[in-house]
Amino acid sequence: MPKENDQNNRREVAPDVPRNKSPIIRMATVLSMVVIASIFVLYKTDRRSIKAYINIPELNAVEMRGREAFNNVCAGCHGVNGTGDTDIGPPLMHPYYRTILLSDEAIIKAIRQGTPEDKWKYGHMPAQVDVSNEQALEIVAFYNALRRVNSLGK
Image (tube, rainbow, N blue to C red; front, side):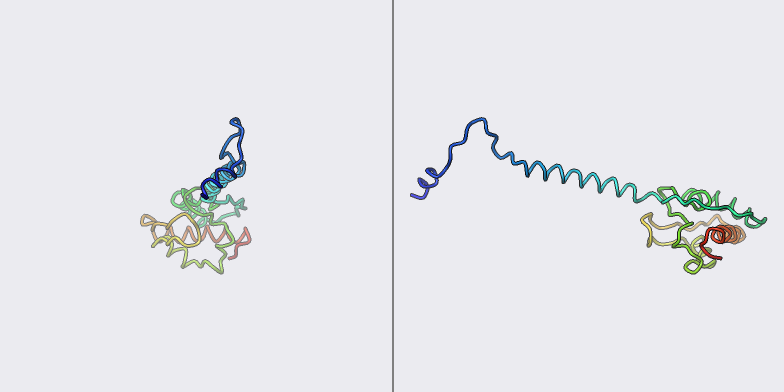
């Protein structure tokens, strides 16, 4: 008996009225597609370093050799003069790398042993085994000269 009641309570709908085509479902689908596309675009953009614009000081002979070594070894990941703008590594001219937080010993250790993935989303930094002790010290001297004139310490 309840089946008859259900059939009697149904309204007749004209044949040209679309069924199950709720505008809410369409809007939710479009919104979902926009959110997914935005996440993809933002994730892709997030992996690119922020390009830093820096001042280059007058460099002494050791710092000049350090700049050359840095740009030959480190710039592929950290950008020329540490300014970033790569998909591989973070900019080294970033407030995170202030002298207080990153000592000369820590820089040399990072060059020698690499670093784990921690603060950035670029993965770990591999050890730079082809960099000599002298080159590592020159890179540190150059980097400290950059940090000094760009308000990052030393």
